Image (cartoon, rainbow, N blue to C red):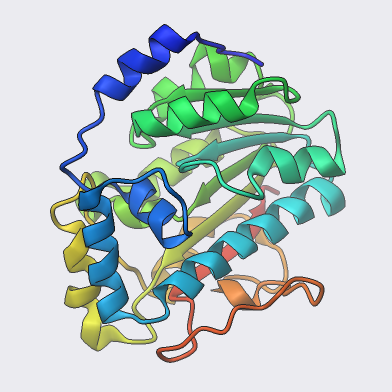
Length: 277
């Protein structure tokens, strides 16, 4: 594995983690039933549960979408390179596991800005196929696209699947979310893919303030966007059927247990895949 580091480096990374400030990756981990989170993360997550009783089922449905979408890219679209930005804390069904199951030669570069993700991802990836993990922020595309550990895994002259799953709603309008995505789209050649999912308030606009409030004191505020706004991220690329839809409706797998989502029956997220023409 590229970018391997020892226990001493992991200890140094852990010292930089602020356990008193909730972080989206750790909130997500808690809602998925993980253990890599702290009191501040759990408190923020429980506030979300109060607003939307189905949030736990919703995040599991979102994770299931990611698995199906990666499987499509690897097994059906023939993608062999994956740049997963904002990967989050490792859990079951990670990108490299799905992709390398379809093609053992698949190459995956993970990127996240939470130090705890690095520690757990490096431990998980030891001994796997061609993978790397770096600490970087998606708001700094040049850093990611030129990072030696990314370039050790990804050949940008060949098609790349860029994954932005559940992260763009943590980029405010002032931070130019569309410009950032366009930078990643411009960096990959024809035949590349964009896998993107995004939180929405289309199904319950009246509770937007309550839904986003738990993130106000986190490392990144949440910005839900409409179907039209999410679809804009895919502009100029060819959408794969069924287009940009609620994540539970993107090629549902009959063999996979379908989550029952209370509180309105929605996963509160859109997702889709597009291919660069």
